Image 1: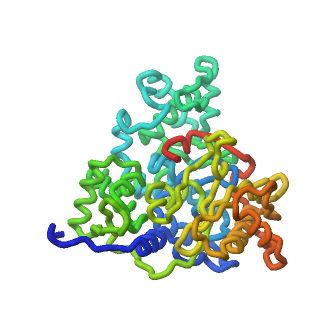
Image 2: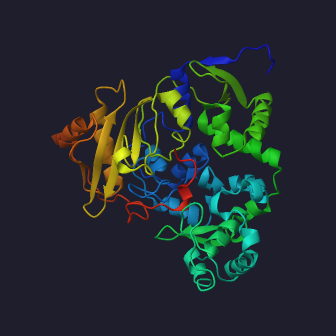
Image 3: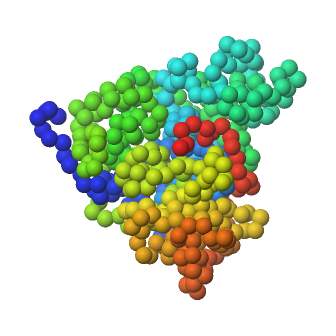
Length: 446
């Protein structure tokens, strides 16, 4: 692009709608009763590029909810199949922290595996040097016996290497650290997750599709450029910081990739009114004039990843408060923003009480300028989520917290807003625990 040409200008509203369209959140979900298929799931994955994994399960596993937000009630067995059986459509790796990515994207991250001494995150630092014999033995065990969980591997080393606490605070065993080292370096990956949400590790060559394994390696510069394009497509419009954050890339290679994509016409420099730094529009981004979807978004949704962008686009200052002491939380433990049209109109603290078969609303807050219909729309969305979670009722817990709690309670009690039948609804996998704090979500959540 010639330096003298001024950048296109987007209003904040236009940028907001572009962002929603890129995420598949500008249109209403498939009509109730629509049979959601693997094709639907693949379309969402193709748009988002990844699904963040986290073990917190107060509502539903983190990777399950973004699909619900875009598809409505769906059978989570589809995701189990996509990530756990041939033909494999998803595989686990460190992308935006621990994530599901398509196998082709996994190959784009091999440079990160090769540079583990500078790229590795958290508790695996130094494991190859500190326990090289264990790493060698664990590699052989997985080769001979896999797939295996970390607990099963640990049993082989429990006497010699008892559990030790690492700098992350997770109670990782030496065997687990060795497995995570092999996972980061690409020698093993997750063949599937069991009912307790534990990885079953196997050799990567036995997990990735044959055609993906047979593809030639991708040079680092080319791989980073491809990752930035995936990020740009998922954002629609984004700053350099946003484009780097999606796959946790460093700024310098991201800048180089952006410059090349601009030169190739894939990205278009734009100015977003009200933003104090340059932005980039994907050349194929849709620019809808309206946005009509409504959806609850969990804290790990790609639209919510980058908090500064979220605040600048929607005016919502959002922080996850899971690790904040209860008395100091402003909005609650597991708070979901509520999208209504093209604005984030509310936020709601939710808990799936599976023993009582109730979706509990612990707090509900309206955002400034929320439409008058927000409480009614949120009540309808809560009923739909309860149906997906195979819960029989939605209850606003007392004492009411938040200025929207009374309105939501009133809307839920209205004769026309009873909870829909849960017949045939699929409960999310692993819906047996209220809370988990595994290492999957331990970086960059707030």
